[in-house]
Image (cartoon, rainbow over all chains, first blue to last red; front, side, top):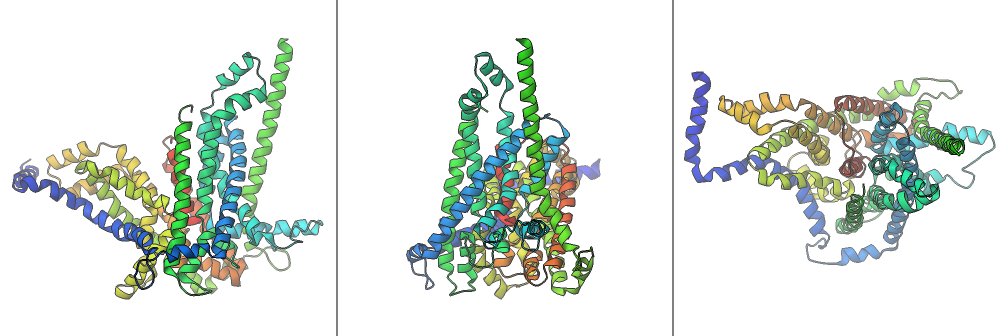
Length: 300
Length: 282
């Protein structure tokens, strides 16, 4: 008892000495963490944020942003936006169908648990391995293609589109659909069967139910989820880089190109300007997403 | 009348079941064929039979072996640094600096909103400076990876700490004479061991799949080397990819078994899940 008591006495005796400075000493506990994130998170963010406004001689300039009007950056912005929008809408639509198929089954069934955990894994599945998986299946040497070709269906007759934008879009669906399932499932779970029964007892049919009840309630949630999918595709890099090595159609690839540049001069300021363009777009989309989520929570 | 209603119900039910199973079947084909194809591709022999030649010749590529070793080391270092940095800080903030908790949460979740490729742009000068002043070893990548795994590990550890009464436990231990180190090591850590394992597995999986940062800081980790080798020998490269996928899958299965408590799927989860894609994988 005394042995255990001694240190406690010592500490409580030490405390009054620290007195008014106790608060400032407590702060020391957070210093290692703050120093670390300061160096490896906040400093890099600041380098991007401020660095975009300076040229190589450290003088203030807006010319980095002026370079954003270069034709290949404009092209990449449009391409990235189109691919992200198409995969977001297609992923949202297909994901919503899959989520509806889950929700109409047993809530604690094996099938539901299986699909939900598989979605959790597949939504995280991306990058190099994902590109390889598609090359190995529907690529020019993949068994799906060889099988289709042997049966008279040569889907690469007009060029190998897998290594172009349309192929990239298809590959993106592989993680967009599971992500949609995860995001949209809670909204579908919030739909009450009583609403359907009420519609029917008032003489409404299936079309009325979807058009006037379930549709309007689910729409903000659907749109919000699609925005999340858009941001997800917009900032992706590894999958595009692993799949497409000729030309750099995605904005993220343009950032990498300006940074290390295998084709021209290294332009760190320019890389930062494109990075800010990307951040601005992704942030806008994310803000819209959270606004829609707030609207959704009124009903679900 | 009643019979008619029942038969409408019956048709609707059949239609629904047909829709469900067609959807599930289509999803199964879309999601399983590419993974199966990788296994098929990596065991393909020239004459159409099966062989493990590609798998065996993984060891003939010293760069690949070096990259695998480097990625495993990175995963280990990242997990340790993350835990040493995050666990004491989160406990300390809960006990002594509750005013700081919002700021710590904000900082920890910040990497979710910054695409990895953007982070690379800011890290580039930092790594150039570190390379000329300290070390340009590939293992320095783990310093950046800690930031990358921060949001996921924060959530995992926060859930663990939220489930126990940190304040009462540590006050009890302190009043019985335990040092702060003993509180941390013998009281907090055993109580949140599940959360710690959870956070560790997540960071291992993320680090093994990381491509964006390593590729642009010009370090050859596993994923970067996969792309390199894929251009020379696709079969071997895909064999390694399958192996790493299996490894990650095992980790995630363990994770699923640990998380046996029912989880709420809420919109916040969406951001958590969107993160790995934006942050590292895609």
